[in-house]
Image 1 (cartoon, rainbow, N blue to C red):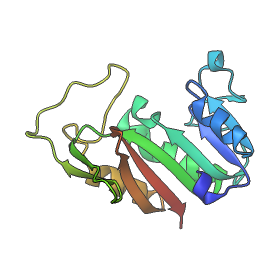
Image 2 (cartoon, helix red, strand yellow):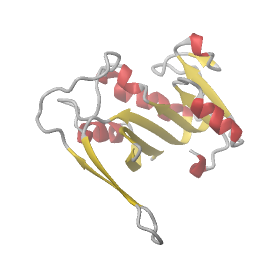
Image 3 (spheres, rainbow, N blue to C red):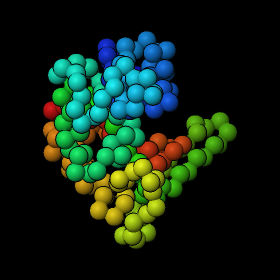
Image 4 (tube, rainbow, N blue to C red):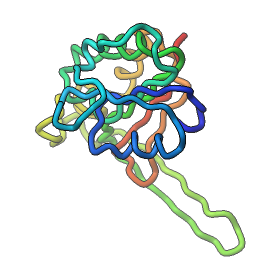
Length: 177
């Protein structure tokens, strides 16, 4: 988010407030939206129907939230994110595919971190959070399917990656076309 140097950000799914607190400390104007009023979001609403005018925020984020909805609502929710964004949407989704991480520290040389991703060992369903309807890598939800759905909405996937320290989180940097 910081690298995009946005003038305004909407965070969908406030969670524990870590992201919004960090961005505020970095001087970013941020508003939060969550369906759970107990989390004290700026706007209490669902991602399915965001009560905000079109193109109101330069960047919209939605981290670890869309998998809580049935996959049949994925594209329509992405359309809502696109509608309220002027330029970028950043999404993170759980990815259960195997990831092997290598961190090599050699004195005098730069630290080398690399990650190799592999599909699941079989096509069976994997245990997941009881709150998640789907996750990348579960049977019927390969990364390719998720990517096609994102592109169907009209986004260009500028970058997708998994966080080295927590490969369960796959991020998508999406630009409106």
